[in-house]
Image 1 (spheres, one colour):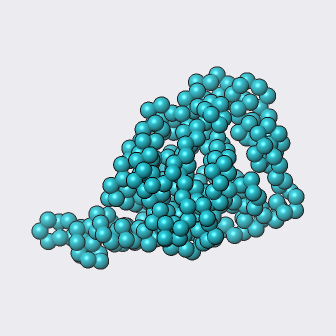
Image 2: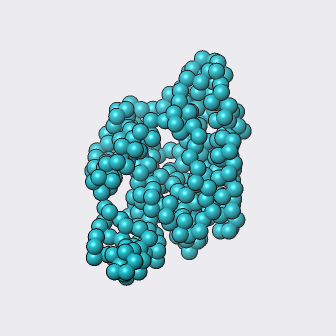
Image 3: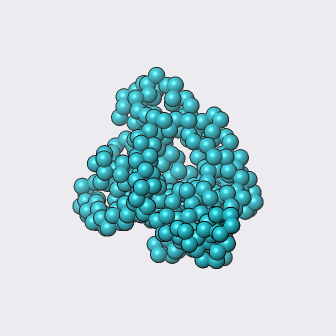
Length: 326
């Protein structure tokens, strides 16, 4: 946009105040300086919280932190919103046991929690499940890709930890990119039930065994979260899980990013398409649950909620021990 270029230095200028821009938002056809980007960013997150009533009635919010840019940004913003409301915050970190990766990001989480005065509770796969991801990767009985085990273990551990801490909401750092990637993956895999539950206020089943998930960063692109975390001075180690190379998600991520670069706004279009169908999906599966077609049981092994007699976490731990899969 030539009208946004400085005459002397050729720098892009803010579309609002003509100061030097720190980012150009191609999907919005405007550029923003540091001040207006931060203001705009926080305003959009607060709008998501307000529009979806994510904090309504909440007395104690758990924030799932990893030490990465998404979760630390989420913690910082929720602290700003929750403090005036006198809503308690507790950070919950799940240590998967990946040497040289999670131990570094734990330090970043501890630093921000100390600065904000937010209690940090750390739970580990090793203690809660009996194995670390490093051990899973060398287990001769391993039959699935790493992300399949890790996703199941993480969801199980987070729900259990949230109940132990006593929170009534669990905030997770899922951003726009996470959402549209999951949407496309679930379409390709034909998993409509998973599509129905990936909402700003997640969860199809109202049960005390499930702690409701909230996703305040739902409409924020990953690139903007990275910039926000840098501008706010968060101490963040930008690392990628060493086991992600096995996953399906990077292929989908690269495809969507290429699409976005050629057709700005594609990520928001995909999200809006999902939201247009989400009510129908939710109605379909809630009706199926209420009619008894999808019963909620307690796992025969661990007691956690499951739609089968033995939950997926216990099926996987049995498998890794060389025992019967179910």
